[in-house]
Length: 403
Image (tube, rainbow, N blue to C red; front, side):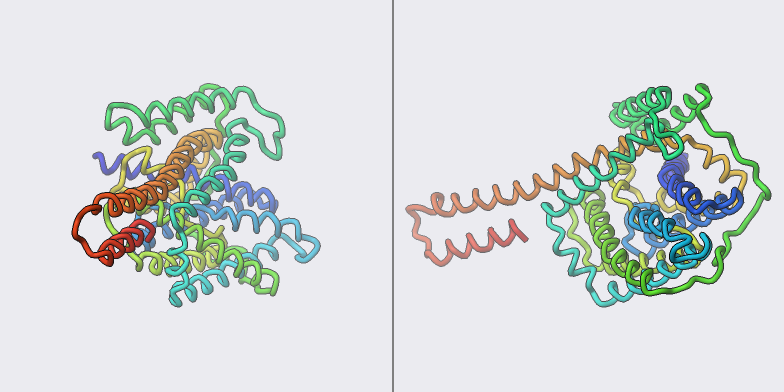
């Protein structure tokens, strides 16, 4: 029972965090209602499969996959090229599908070559701290706008949405810090259900769309066969390099939470890179948005305390399953966007604490080294100990503290 609820919580969280991107991109490319529903179905299907593959074969950590913000930006930029470089929206989407396929191949090449493992060694606690702070600062604007009901169609703040979002934020903080263990473990699902109910009562929740069928398999190359041009290929290569840093940071962060007292597995990055390449290929093949391991999963695990892999894997299977049933998918897509933003805001706020903890690790190592230095110089004073042994102790201590 507990595992089922935990898996359901993972499923709702993954969908709530992923549903905004395909809707926003479909609007940019002026897709019809049927095309938008299909695009959303394929994107969330790919995200579910990507998380399952990573959990079973890749980094093997409870890190869900979400639409990569970098690919979201590229989709947005290329929408402006319609009528300039591309004759239609479908032609632009075909080129982006080709870019995802190129990214997948490049990802796999870099993983096999060992480049990702080399990059992982550069992610010291200080680098991780800077990455997390920049990530929170970058996303905070989107969260605030989403909670206030500000969008391209509604540039002004909606007071009712802002008030309801504030209630959801307060409730999510309260649930996450409850002294009752089961409330804290399922704080995300409680917050989402509460927020959804409040928006329904206030008449601010979107209506559930009508499904045209009960069962529908995602289609390969839904926009037609991918095309390849030099501009998209160059963009895909640069995007891949940036996505690798995101992968490494997410894995390093989750390792510190799930396996804090265990040494880091160097093969984890290679496996994660290989599967990330496969996931990019899936994104291109199913004409969806490219995925990436989401660093916010660390905030989710910290908020709920759910470190086990089984609920996460079952949650990925549930995500895959509901994408095959359009009526269920339409119900999930009716979750008010401000509710998803509010709950995710609370989860991402935990990442500020994680960033400070990463910085503290660096401080503790330096303090330990200085303490050892003074112990060696003062503690050994007056004893008949060879000078070479003292320096050997200093060198080994510094090596341990700064490795």
